[in-house]
Amino acid sequence: MSEKFDLIRAQARLHHAYLLGLQLMVSVNHEPALIEKWMFRLFRRQHEEKFLSSFEKLGLTDLPDAVACAHYHVLSNSLGGVGVEFMAETDRKAWVRFRYPRWMYFGPTICGVPNEVGRGFLRGWYAHNGVSLRNPKLGFVCVSEDMTGEFGFCGYFQEYDHELSEQERLRFAKDELPPPFKQEDQPAPPEEQWNEERMEKANRNYSVEFIRNALLQLEEVLGSDKAQELGGKSARLIGLQYFQETRELVETEDGDLDSAASYLQRMFQGMGDSVEIVSKSGSGQIELIHSGLRIVRDLKGSQKELVLNCWQQLWVGAMSSFRQRKQLQCDFREDKIYWTL
Image 1 (tube, rainbow, N blue to C red):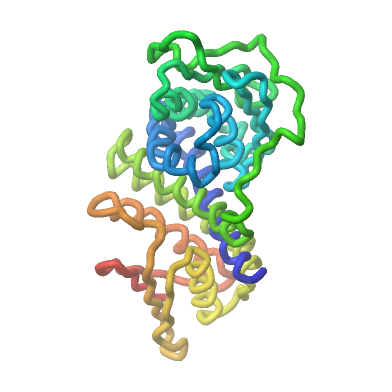
Image 2 (image 1 turned 180 degrees about the horizontal axis):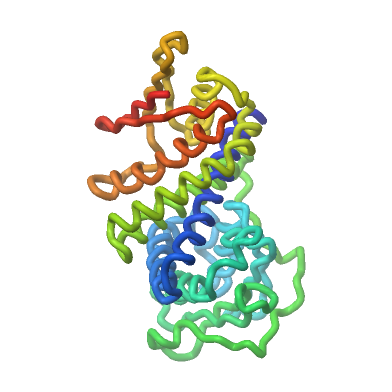
């Protein structure tokens, strides 16, 4: 079972790194206002796909709205490997504090993205919780941000006595501090539903869904050609950079064509996909038939094409990182990828 988890962890690590790399790639090529627009669209899409649909799974339906929102952000983020703490004040005022290292800006990434990234996700997600819950009195108050060098992203969900305008759904109050942390108050997901394997898969899916939606929303703000250029270049760089780490996780060699085919097969299995190796290395080539394709599940047309065109560059980069460089070509046919090494 540990070996199976390592395949899943390798994909979680790789797609997390891809998201961070894409943020940095966009940040050095475009103005902060565009980054904020992109992050707003990304987090609004994530919110619309995940927020309400996860409430029952996380056992939150019977809690007061402010408390339920705070619990949601602790639980959903923890399943993705993100450290968040909950502090209760009242049933109508509940705090969340994100701890370091920040998943969204892991490592030195936090020094390379503008503060507009945080403003984008605040507007895209946190300010929209009351709208999704059909509670027009519920808003979010931010007391500390990340890139400003305070004590990290922190704030509280507040249910007011009056309905909020769109501008009032997000406020900033930098003179407030959260109540003391209490371990006994921290929520936990229902144990009967969240075994170790499901937790590992949730962590992987968290990264995969974020980078997929990030590419789709980047296309909306930059257009298809520019999104594909930046998405593909950052993917190739991440494939190069993270080959050794992921190779060690999936236990393959830095060697010949057979080891390269084994690496790809095991990595794709870590996505929950199916891979068949159909030719032998004696011919100088190896072909893999790859089906399942979690990365484009439920996508159609141009959206599917964009994501696949960018995503393939992760593996082109990884193959170029072998000591004996490998060439990798891919052909998308119907719902399969035919990879040729």
